[in-house]
Length: 357
Ligand SMILES: Nc1ncnc2c1ncn2[C@@H]1O[C@H](COP(=O)(O)OP(=O)(O)OP(=O)(O)O)[C@@H](O)[C@H]1O
Image 1 (cartoon, protein in one colour):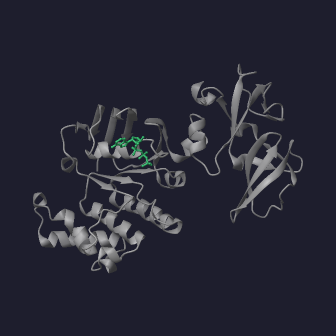
Image 2 (cartoon, protein in one colour):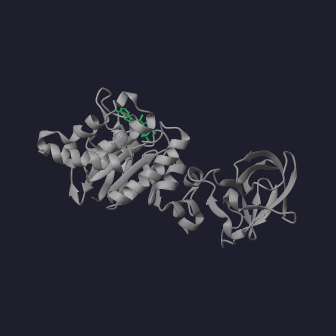
């Protein structure tokens, strides 16, 4: 178990700035998820921690020790990748034993067997131990990859989108299993993904990475309910937060070119300012007496809920409603929201006014 600290890490590939002054602390035993779009710098961050890449600037500290001069083996971190790096000709047992057979470890056959059996039990792959890896399904292979990391009992687990090659159902199963595994091992996990559902459902903490910079760190609930800017507001939540351009006028949001007006919690001194108003789809309420009229442009049925796309003038927004609500395409509906549910962002910078105040 270990704490990881990245201090002012920058990494450049030619003219490409992969990481730009990254500061990040992952506490001992934490399940930390780094969320970012493709090219945000997630893999580079992991490779720098693992010692496979050197930063141009900044330091990596593991348990307070600067590990700049430590090679990958000395850092004792395990990297689990999206593409399983297994030996196809070996059995599952052979693959799990492999990292333990190194001379440096000096382990007896009995010790190795014990570790392998234990890891196989934890990952529910005991019945597969004698099977050749090339004859496993994708989900089974990913379990074996994780097993190869577990047997080493590393200080830290670094996971690079380990579930993204799996189908949706299996991803769900393994998400739960990885969380359980983390609880059982009590180890530090750094998991990177571009999938916000994965980030929200797995992380004790989430760090949102945008073009090599960390934009926000917090619990999933904090990041969801109080995004620091419109980038984070868009990055978490499905469907994403409605972001509507408008102006603040006497305690009301005037959306679009006067398309509609709805109350917000007054923010002194912001009258007349060009803003972007943010409202989560589940906070848009449909009621017959609600103040604004919209037209139903689209309906997505998700079992227990429906996601409606509403058109109001030039504006389009999402509303999440119970599945039993009777509504058809092109219906005219009335909607509103509670003033305290609306976030306000500066239109130019995208910064959340509540954060910058
Ligand atoms: N070895 C390399 N040589 C040149 N450019 C690189 C190299 N590795 C990464 N990059 C660039 O650095 C940036 C960050 O890449 P990185 O792989 O860390 O992003 P990522 O967030 O993991 O993306 P993805 O989700 O697509 O894997 C990208 O623009 C990428 O093209």
